[in-house]
Length: 345
Ligand SMILES: [Zn+2]
Image 1 (spheres, rainbow, N blue to C red):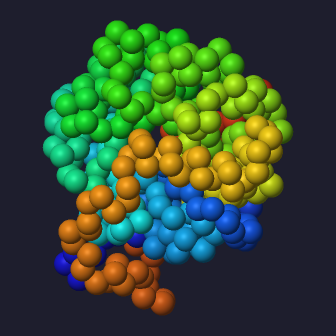
Image 2 (cartoon, rainbow, N blue to C red; image 1 turned 60 degrees about the vertical axis):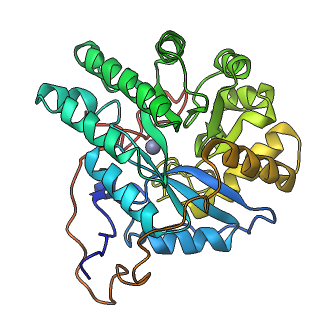
């Protein structure tokens, strides 16, 4: 098939980490009221039997996760995200140059071209967000921060020009992220993806009407600060995400992640704020649609053969565009380095 999409275009470096359990966890009990995963990376192969994105979506549908926002981190993965969203009704796309990619592109003199490519992708109808973009002071040191900031500012402008949501990656950079948003002017719908702040940042979000998207980290035993923040946030500003294949929720931490494991995170969030999972799920779904629109606002325009890009039994694994390491894994307030946090960027 000429229009077939590669099942995966990146491979998780931590797959070589033999201390991890590389089996996908079993499906949790289905949610009664469905939710959306507003941040995932289905183009990344992880685990001993990497799941095709359609398999991910089928598993997710079966447990009440009815759609995902598939997020790009460079030009290639943003193109992939937009292409999948174009033909898969359960997928909407976000496009951006990740804050840890921007300095590398800048050093090669390629950042402006990459930003122009993101700007072009942003006009596709099923691209609903600019992200993930932002500031990452954990993996990028002083030398790369100018390029990072320039890219962040450009992405904020794209979101406003195209009237799209903004998905922010903020790692160890709360103060400068907030300052940049206030200086440049935040888009109407601004989301802190994988919210990693405390009560102080949560109150700034509450005051500004910015959204906090919680990942599996909120289920971790040592993430008391995240649960404190969750408790004080207005429920109308809450979103939930897998950030798969990273940040697998408790009790499967460390194993490959997928949107189908989101019920664990939703139930932990409901416990934290003292409501039941169905009440919270209804709120989360309505918030998600407020930020990104409905999944069928723009029909898929190139459905093709829905089975065309599903690999045949016995097919050789697709070639991987290998980006070592990953920019996402982290554990809030965990002193010990994570197994897959070392060795990149
Ligand atoms: Zn991510």
